[in-house]
Structure formats: structure tokens, C-alpha cells
Image (cartoon, rainbow, N blue to C red; front, side, top):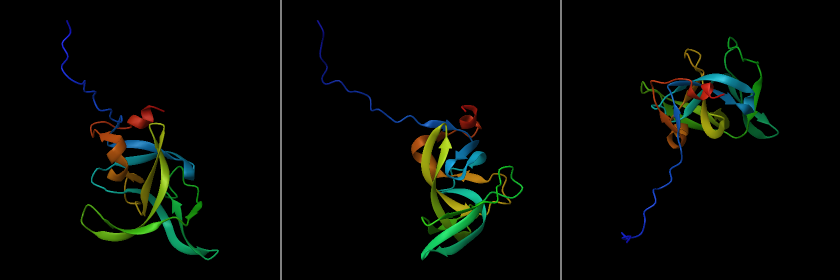
Length: 157
């Protein structure tokens, strides 16, 4: 004889999150950039990508932001100027507490073979070791960070 104990409780289905380490490589399809070194930074709210020659221009009566990605010394530097009319400006506070206004764009990044659309500040990261910083806004819904690991997405390619 089977005893009933009430309605069965099914476990809640949770989205599977990717385990990511402290460093990795990502692709940026909009810019034809592959295997760009990234630092995973849970202290940063917004992700950042290194660029220079950031300037506002007018094209056909619309305000457009123009910029060049990476440094001339980077192996993937192509001296190409990218332009977009979809951007905003935001006050960003650094880990040292210094606040500055930066332009923010939305673009796709590929990690673990999956495309994520997220915001990136256009930042001068010339003095930094990694041209891309991945922040919490991207990490929060899709990733768990294990700082003892690295290049987990890149190893799955």
C-alpha cells in the first residue's frame, strides 16, 4: 500500500551558469576581434574595452561616437575607426574612488560559444595588462566566478 504525502514538490529549474575564471579570452563579432584577453572583475559594475581616439562627430545631422579599438602594438590592431549613434555617457567610479564620465556602447561578446549582448565603457586601458574588463552587469545572470581558474571559455573552443 502506497501512502500519499501530499502534492509532489518539483525542484525549481535554475538556469545553468557558466563557471568562469579570473582571466579568459572573448570574441567581439561586431568588430571582427577574436581571442581578446579579458580580466574578470566582480568589483566593476560595467564592462570596459580599451580604445583610443574617442571623439564625437556629426554624421548626417546625428551625433555619432567614433573610436579605435585596442593599441597599435596589439596583434589584432587594425587602425579601423568604428562609429555608432547608439551610445550614452555615464559617470563611472574607479576602484580608487576616482569618478569620470565615459561613453557606453552596447555590443555582443562571445564566451563559451554563446553570444551575450552587454554594455561596455570605452576606456583608455593602455596602462592595463588586459584590454577588456568584464564586470558584474554581464556576470550576474550567466556566470559563477572561480578566481583560481583561468581561460575556461577559451579551452572549450
